[in-house]
Length: 110
Image 1: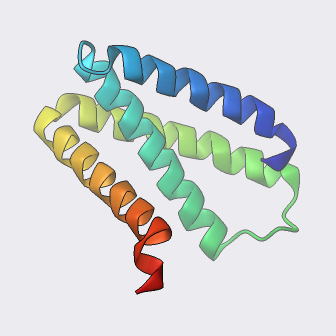
Image 2: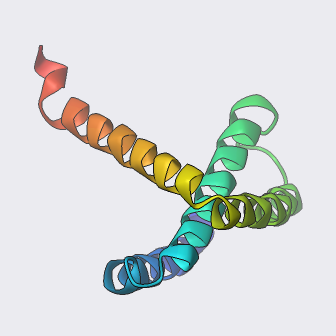
């Protein structure tokens, strides 16, 4: 992943720009994208904390990425179909990220 950080940065900048401009107007598409990204992130965290190490071969990482994208599409479709669940997940994720931000900037001194 570090070898292609410029590519991942460009992809996430484009997705963030898209969501920032059209997130409210295209709520269903936003739910699909967020569901897909959250599922991919969770699968990556699960695999890299339990099974994979830094010495894992590159093809294994790409295979995990491919499988997590397939699972991510399933998660995106789930949030696309269940709009209220998607709004709750999006609100929970936003609260989690806000809590991390506050903890890392201010609350760590307490």
